[in-house]
Image 1 (tube, rainbow, N blue to C red):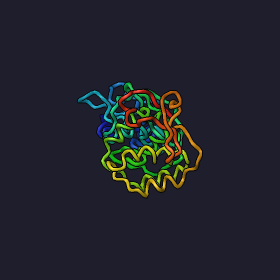
Image 2: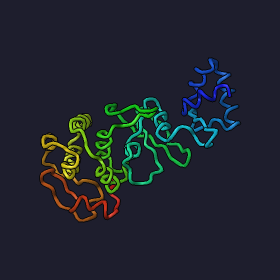
Image 3: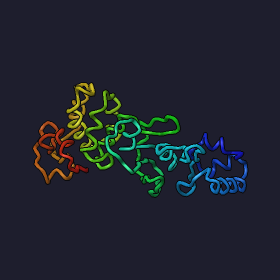
Image 4: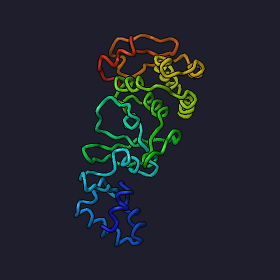
Length: 253
């Protein structure tokens, strides 16, 4: 139990952390094996462990802390980020961790942790041992990939619960991705929430300035259902976007 209180503070850790704590590789190995047998720590995946609470017999680290330690520089993203921000409206048993370093999906505590490749580091906050995309980055990521935010019908209710978005941050992240289709989708979707999110007209003007006359479908499955053309955004879109949440159909990008 010599190191237990310090492991409680770490909550989620790697073998290197124990080596730094004990000052010796062999001692670190002995501590890990002994504490695992006593049920004081638990293996999450290779070289990643969590401390177990003596009171609850559950991991001290939550899903967000574990995702933040899944790989160097990892951070919580997509639907998992909405969950962290208290905006998710669906039960999800997958946890998305974005990082430049790839890792294989792994399961722990009934959850599957999945890697999302990324080349963008902007818009990531660090809070209480959790690295997570801020709200604006989470929204832009969700628009970029509906599939990882529960489909369009899972994404829109999250947007509907947000009281405010910083338009300049949104544009910074859109510019970082710099894809015409993303400007189109972001402008079209967020225009439906312009008043509620307090988004200025210049944000939409900036999005429109990036698009061409080439028309796209808002999501691939839209071809199979009734849709219309929104000439303002050069998109084929649902007849009623907000009705998507009531229909409960799958709308994955």
